Image (cartoon, rainbow, N blue to C red; front, side, top):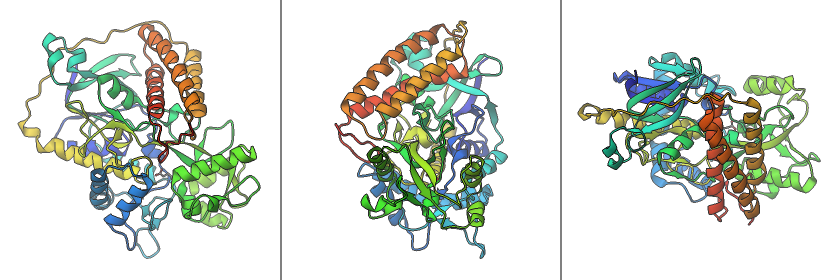
Length: 510
Ligand code: SIN
């Protein structure tokens, strides 16, 4: 029997959890899907934008607009700067008890990050996202389906058994959901579906994101016919620990906010050559500067130096980073550590308005999966948690405002057709390697026409193979992810090919 609910939320980071809390509080029947792994939100180290001394919504807006390199949507920026800081106070601190760090005098401790005019970032040591998520999840009283992955959105035109629904406006009525524990595919009908699936950086070889960040929401929305925009603007974080063959590990920008400096391979500072704000220049500039220094010297990394601070201070302010590095033989207080840039954040996504509405009726997208134009061509540090919070609230408020008058019904839909060929995991791993290497080498920090064309050709061929395999194979979570990953990689590449203008984090040399 299909499950029928009021709102289906796909993803459970700050955006999904905030929407779920806000809607359930008003009595709506909410189902939340979570693949059961850490979200990008829970991994966020640095912090969340608040309001600093001498700060104002106008000053914050100007910083966002400057970072966005002329491509921000002014209405989205205005919404964030006006609603964001009060929501942090009301919803996160007062209502959900998030314990941000405080100074000795009891006032909230504010740090600085790149391209901010004043220190205005709230943090919980270097585990801000984890502190927020644990507070929100503690209060969440909804049907939370862990180990559940949405496969495809159910739309009237694609899945209804009523022939004339083909002519209905494009409308989402829920999702087919894979249950990794039972291997079954469930139908979950919903009057409203909210995508809150996070980002896509795992389609690149080096990324700061958890494995689930492979563009699931973008791929599902695209297949359902939603408008997708700005995918070429993938932000690369300048500093991740370079300790191959280990996965990249984020070294928060807050380190530079607290005085850490970037050094070239000969231990010389270099950021003064690239921007007046030096180490705290916008991220795209810092990332490309590191990349440029690496190419020029032939080195495979740069250095990050925070040795001016004491061991005790670093251990207290950045305990998780300090421990992670130490466990791999790097003592942040004794020597500079090797760093390289890595894919970090998608500024593009499923096109939405100020309440998360997509171009498909009854489908919203919030958080990193969405693109309201807030970030333009490059995101200002520590705005992403705030964006998730704000759009979750405006989407929920908008849903609630018209709820009582709604008369939704669900159509008869096609059952999921199961296939049975056993999945060869070696194939999946190899395909992922191809996607990630192709994206890193051909669609990375610096892009040119020939590489982009090559990437498009390779990814198209691979997508064809994967789609054929997907038709025959027994479903697994990994296979669902691979199908989404290759499509997302292709969409990024096509966006990068179409757009010949270098701007923000999309940089073309030809
Ligand atoms: C960081 O801690 O450097 C990441 C913060 C962000 O991406 O907003």
